[in-house]
Structure formats: structure tokens, C-alpha cells
Amino acid sequence: MKRVLDLDPATYRRHMIHGEGRSWAETNCYADVLIELLHAMRFEPIAALPFTLRIDFEGDQWTFFKFPHGDLLTLFALDIQEMNPWRSLVHHVEEQIGQERPVLVELDSYYLPDTAGTAYQLAHVKSTVAVNEIDVDACHMGYFHGQGYYHLHGDDFIQLFQTGGLVHERMLPPYLETVKVQKRPIPSNDGELSEASIECLRHHVAFLPDRNPFDGFKERFQHDLEWLMKESVETFHQYSFATLRQYGACFELVETYLRWLQDRGEHGLSESIGAFNEISNTAKTFQFQLARAMARRRTLPLEPLDTMAALWQHGMDIVVARYG
Image 1 (cartoon, helix red, strand yellow):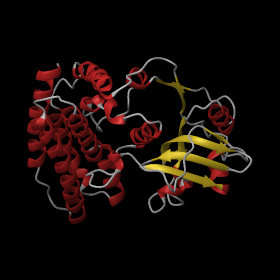
Image 2 (tube, helix red, strand yellow):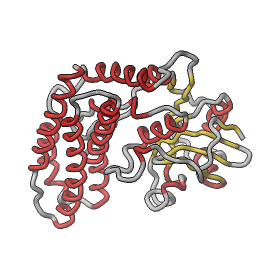
Image 3 (cartoon, one colour):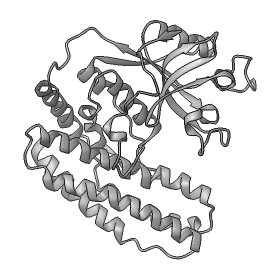
Image 4 (spheres, rainbow, N blue to C red):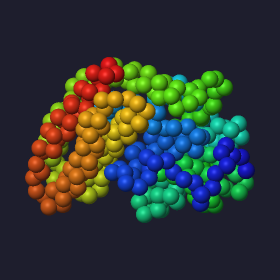
């Protein structure tokens, strides 16, 4: 067995971002994995959330938001580097775990037991996990995924790593990263961490979207509605994940981050916190309304998008005035 952190799925306690009472139980695979990995390494992932303010509408989807590697290096001395998978995947993972480096890798959810009921043994969906422990001989892996920490064994291990050979010669190796812990000074207390986080915030505020992203999204959404009304529930889930769920979950993280700052003495953020909270909740309601409209083939009022646009502008104006 090779292991980075000594963890047991039965006793592991997830971060509050994945706790009870959240509007969005999960965000996206990459962000969720890093939230739990940072938490397990005794870092505070909320401090690294300033980047969430930069989410934008990209034309056919909202930003698939990810922790910037530079912020993780600054705040926690974690250096994430892409790997060249020139050998079999399992060899690379075993090598890096042996050097006490967690490995971020895209795997097939069809063989991830924690996705039971959604993808496990049902659908081939790529998803990022963080491998923490591995025993190749025993076909065992311990990994972070979604909201928690899990183990898998046996045939799932064999199929994930294709230890019996590639399923097809055109199979390409997955995207692979290693997480190195650099030996350098990092913020050593809560005050220093919040100060360093605010510096990251000032950087990201300088790169906010050039226009209100809800304006562009409304234009595209009006165009998409015609074909959405003819599509299946599977299309709804795909579309919602790329749009409503992405920005809804992300703006809940914005709210979480601003509350964290407020709890550490930053003033004047209450209205901004309220604005992003309302965007997140409105996105959830709008998602349900879209599902019903598609099922019944009925029109969908777009006023909620105007409301969210106004909330975004108000919330951002406050942040920019203070940290811009």
C-alpha cells in the first residue's frame, strides 16, 4: 500500500461546502475534489475562492471554474503540475503516491462506486478524482471524488486503469496532474491567510467580465429555448450542468467566500453576500422551471434572468468599490 494521507471513508468528515443546508451539494468535479483534498490536508479551501468572482458566460456554456494553480501555490505552497503519461496510467499514479504526492486524474465514472445511482455501471462519464492511496497488487484505490473520500477494489480498479490492456487502441491517456508540497513559508495563522487571500481577490477583481454575463446568457438562452423544448430530459441535464448549475453553484461559493471575509473583519459586504446568495437560489428555482417547461412543452418566463443580472451588477459593484 502506498498512501499520502491516512484516511478512512467511514470516519472522513467532508468540508462544510459539501455539508447540510447548501443549495448546490456539488459544484463541478475538479473544484469539488480540490475542496476536499485541501480540507484533508488541513488547509482552508474557502481562502482560495476569490477566482469564483470571475465566472463568465462563454457563448455556449458558463465558465467551468477551477482553482487557479497560482493561488494554491501562494496560499498553501501546493504546486500542481501536469504529467506526461508516457507509461501506463497505474504506474504513474503509483509512482507519485509513493512520493507522497496526490494525483489528479480523469477517470470513467462507470467504475466509480460513489456515483451509484447516477453513473456507476450506468453511463461512461469522465470525472476528476484525487488519488490518495493505491495498492496495485491488491487492486485497491483510495480517492477523493465529489463530496467525499472513498475506496474501490477489484474489477472496478482493473477497468479504471485498464491493467489488462487498452480497451481500444484509439484510447487516449487521461489528463493527469501531480500535487507537490513545496517547502516554503505560507500564511501561518488566520490573519495572515485572510490577508493573502485578499491579495488574490484584488488580482481577480482586475479581470472580471467586461460586461454583465447575464446579458449575454439571456440572449443565447432565448435562442436555445426553441430547440430545448423539443429535446429530451438527458439534454436538459447536459444543458443545465453547463449553464444554470455552473453559475448557480459558483455564485454560492462567492457568497461563502465573502461571508468568510466578513467573519474575519471585512466590512461593507452584507449586500453583496445577499445578492450572490439570491442569484444562487434563483438559479436553482429557474432550473426546476426549465425542466417543467421542457416536459410540458410550454414557454418559460425570462424575468428571473433580468433579476439575476441586476443582482450580479449590484454585488460586483460593491466588491469592485472595495477591492478594485
